[in-house]
Each structure stands twice: as structure tokens, then as C-alpha cells.
Amino acid sequence: MFRSVQWRITVSFVLVVLIITGILGVYLVNSTRSSELDNLRSQLENEARITSEASLPNFLSIEGLSNLDALAKKLGAEIETRVTIVALNGTVLGDSEEDPSAMENHADRPEIVDALTTGVGESTRYSTTLGQKMMYVAVRISYQDEILGVARVSLPLTAVESLVHRITVSIITATAVAALLVILAAWVIARLTTRPIRKLTVASKRIASGELGQKITVEAKDEVGELTHAFNEMSAKTKELVDAISEDRTRLATILDNMTDGVIMTDTEGDISLGNRAAEKLFNIKEARSKPLIEAVRDHEVDELLKLCLRTAKAQATQYESSISKRYLRAIAIPIVHSGVLFLFQDLTELRNLQTTRRELIGNISHEFRTPLAGIKAMVETLADGAIDDKNAARDFLTRIDSEVDRLAQLVAELIELSRIETGKAELKKEPANLNQLVGEVIAQLSPQVERQNLSISQDCAAGLPSVPADKDRVRQVIANLVHNAIKFTRPGGKITITTKTLEESVVVDIADTGLGIPREDLARVFERFYKGDKARAGEGTGMGLAIAKHVVEAHGGSIWVRSEEGKGSTFSFSLPLKATLNVGNP
Image 1 (cartoon, rainbow, N blue to C red):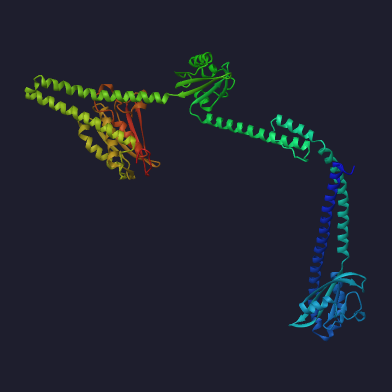
Image 2: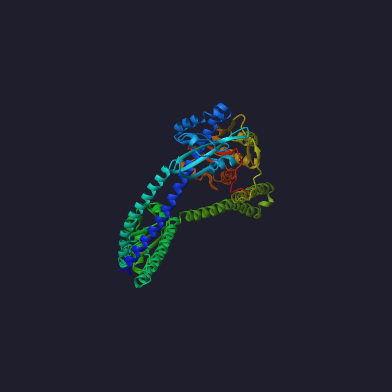
């Protein structure tokens, strides 16, 4: 019996508790005793000093010495402490509880000796007079560095000993109760330690329910301990593998959610099992899981692609315009063996628009070059056929050829300038610029053209307009392009008004005309290269002025926009910031 695990654990627990509580009990008793004695010592020292101060006047007169016994009894009654007043030679002059004349000489008392030597003395001993253990504290009585006597107070240690006794009894009681509880707990623990297989069963069930990383403490090095150790290793390895899979799954989900291409996975029945945010946004769907693919995308091209991929077990692709988002998409279907199909939807709209824009740009450039070149070729052929001999005709042809060459040169120069601005190679020489002054200069420059067109132009500029950091030449070019555009599309008798004003942190320039106006469907394209609103005037200008104006304004950190009503006129506006800004398009 005494060699059983249950018995050994029980005895060990009880011994540990008894040792700990014994050490703790001794410490508490000693600590309490020391603390209480310190408090009592401090109290008695304060009372001794009070007695010293109260008895000093009596020491200064012969008559007062006879009153010290009465003073001692009075003070003893007030502070409930035994008070003794001793002369320098040890004679007791007053005592609150005894007759001084019947008391021994106190010159050899330890507290009296220490008080006369150091000023304060303390002693704890058994009092034969009172028949109990007492604490004595004495304080020297002195006047102007002259030692007159000693004031001593004392109290029995009954209260301290009583407190220590109560604590000792409490500790013994607590130790006994703890020992009983430990015996019971140790018996229960001992029974549990003999049945670790139960713990293995519980831990295995927890792992099966998803609580990975279960670990059982190995309590013995026997066969059960080895089994427990093997179980712990298996549990740790399983958790590592599951955590790695979970981390990979989280990483994959993050990648899918941050992809710009839409990703949808379907099962073999065509129902969606997975979809990323891009796909949900592309097809305007929420909670796509478990929905049929055709219901989510609503395009038969994708449904046919799904069927073809499942039938051939090969990757398939198609391009189509989504009926939901109106975007041009490329759909790629990749078969997943025994699982379904993975779809990748790439938005080709911007690429398609870019290709369209490139084709239009090439077509526009070709058209702009073809017309003057055809004219030049025709006039050269006419001259070669004999018109060169007619001086008047030859001079007229050469003048027209020169005009067409100038037009081509202007077109090439504007294309180069626009390219430099777009690529950031055109350096802006910013300096404080007064837009009112620049507007005035442009009006003066274009006044002859305004008069030839029978138009009127006016300037309504805000007084005290603040300067803006800008490249004066390029901003002047912007204003001139906009005014020239207004002149070109305003009928004779019309009016052009230029207004400047401050708006928040910018200066705004408005160029308003009473011209033809711009159709609503063309407003979004007026700042494109080669855009010409009035087809009847397609041969006038290069169609580059507004595009150059837009890029110059944006290079300054500003904005440009247009408001127009067909048949009533247009207002082109641009703003420049009052503070210099850093722009990507400007080095």
C-alpha cells in the first residue's frame, strides 16, 4: 500500500504543504512580532519625549523636583502608560504606579544607561516589580546641553504576545485544514494519473473536432508515458501541417482578392464554388457561391465555353462584350480534373480603347498629311506639265505650295510639342505670372483676326488678381489656343468674353463665346488630338490646339473643362493653382 503511486503522491503533497505552511507560519509570526514591537517602540518613544518635555520645567527649580511624582502619575493616567522620571544619579523621582522612595536606584538599567549616553534607550525584560514582561523606552532630559535626568515609559507586551498567539493558532488551524484538503486532492490526482488513457481519448476527440495542438503531460516513463509522448509528437506535427495549409490558403485568398482579373471556379455541374472580388465587381454579383455560372455572368459565350472545356478537358478561351458591365472581356477556361473549371476573366476594354485610339491617331495623322501632300503633288504636276512657263500661274502655285508646307511644318511642330509635354520632356520655366496681363497680350495679338471675322472681344478681369507660378509663354499659348478656337467657331457679329477670378486656392480663366456650341455627345472628346467639332470646317487648323492646352494646364497642376450648349455657344475654362505643385508630367 505504502509503495503505491496514490500513497506516494498523497504523502508528497502533504509533506510539501506542511513544509510550506510551516515556513510561512514561522515567517508570519516573526514578521508580525517584529512589526508590532517596532510600532510599540515608536509609540513609547513619542510618549517618552512628551514626558521629557513636560517634566523639564520641574527640573529647573528645587520646588519642582518634589512635584515630579505627581506629574508622573498624571501623565501615566492620561497616556495609559507607566511613566518613570529618573534623576541623573539613577534616583527615581516619580513613578505613575509605584512609590518612588520604595524603588531601587535605576542607574544600572540598560535603557537608562543608553538614554544618558545616546539620548534614547530601549530594553525589553521581565519586570520583577510588575511581574510581567515589559518594553522600556527612555529619553534623556536636558537643558542647554546639560543632562538633568531621564524620562522613561513602559508597557507590558501582553497585547503583542496575545496577537502572536492568535496568529499562531490560526496558522496551525489553516495548516490542518490544508493538510486534509491536500490529502483529498492528492487521492483524486493519484487516481487520475493511473488512467492517462482517458486523457488520450479526450485529446483525440478534441483534435477530431478541430482543436489542434492538444498536448498531454508525460507523467511517467513507462509504456503509457511513451504512448503519451508519441501522441504529443503526432498532435504537434498535425498542427504544423494544418497551419501550413491554412497559411497557404490565406495567402491564396489574399492573392485572389487583390487580383485585377476576375477569377471564378465552378464544379462539374457549372455551379460557382469560388469567386474573387474582381469577379464580383465585374459582374455586379454578391455571394456568388453555389449560383449557376450562367446566372452570374448572363452571357451565353461563357456558358458555351464551360461546356466546351468540360467536354474536351482542355483549356479554352474566347473574347466577348459583357452584357452586364459592357466591358470587353477575355475569358479563359481551364479544366480541373474531377473538380470543375477555373475561369479567368481579363478586362481588355482599356487595351481595346488604346488600340482604337492608336488607329484613330494614325488615321488622323495620315489624313492631315495626305490632304496638303496631295495638293502639293497636284500643283507640282501642273507646274511640270507647263504651267511653270506662265509666271502668274507659277507664282500662284508656288505661294500655295509654300502655304501647304507651312501647314505641314506647323502640324509636325505641334505633334512634337504635344509629345514633349506628355512625356515630361518640356521644361516649365515657372515664375510669378499675372493672368490679366497675359489675357491682355493675347487680345492685342488676335485683335486683327477678331476684326476680320467681324467679332467683338472683351476682357472682364478681376482687380488685384494674385500672380500664379507658371510658364508665361505656355500659359499665353493656352489662352491664345482657346481664344483662337472661339474665333473659329463664332459667327460674324458674335461676341467673345474673357473673365478671370480667384476661386479657393486657384485662379480661373473663362473664355466664353456665342458661337456654334458643341454637341453633347462630343463634349468628352474636345480635348483629344485632331478633334474637330464642326465638320464643315474640318480643313481649318490642325485639331491640336485644345489637346496642347489641356496638357499644358495639367503640367502646371491645374484643370481644364468646357461647358457648352449647341447653338448658344461655349465656355472653356482652366484653373491654375496659386501655389506651385509637383506634377509627374513635368520634370
